[in-house]
Amino acid sequence: MNERLWRVLADAFPKLLSAGVRVTLPLTALSFALALLISVVVALIQYAGVRGLKQVCRFYIWIVRGTPLLVQLYLVFYGLPSAGVLIDAFPAAVLVFGFNEGAYMAESVRGALESVSRGQMEAGYCVGMNYMQIMLHVVLPQAFRTAFPALSNSLISMLKGTSMAATITVVEMFREATVINGVHYESLGLYAEVALIYLAFCTLLTWLQRLGEKKLASYGGEKA
Image (cartoon, rainbow, N blue to C red; front, side):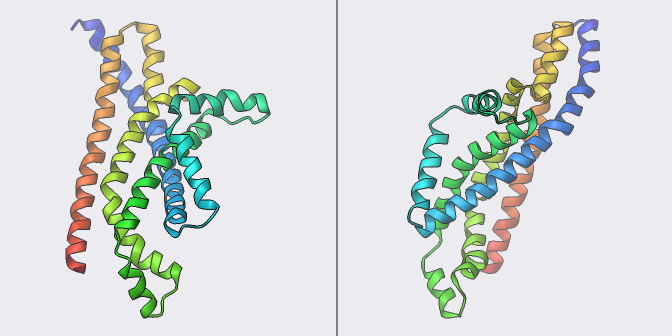
């Protein structure tokens, strides 16, 4: 590895890391929060079997899971302006990533809800709780313990997927690397460097996931 490449990589690292901290991580966090909210609402509607709304939720999941994320990004950022709807790049990315991942996470949450024994509902009614109290205090906490690994994997997948936001001009890590590469033409080194930063972020999230799973397992053991 020549001296020039080392210098380029050393100069690029703080810029790439800064883009990761300022853009990539907030984009991931906001998108995941939106996806989690959507997934819980959609899963609860399907779990309760609300007529009409259940079909709407299934249609939403069908559309999102059946179309590419890149196409969804282009539809919102480049397509909606032709209909008079203008959305800045960052919020557009948050909306698309949130609604996209929310469809997948909804199935994970729904499966976790259905894994909770129906006897828990009956027990809740017996002690005088209403439906919402049972869901909030009995069913959802157990469901989230079951869904935690799948939801954590969705978060890690979303972090990596945010690189696609570069296609709609969001200056996250991958786009920053592309801009720097346009000046220095060191594709292999620069893209390898940004890959390592993604790897570091994902490794941290994986460690937090394992820590969370251990905490939930011990909590579940205490409750038992």
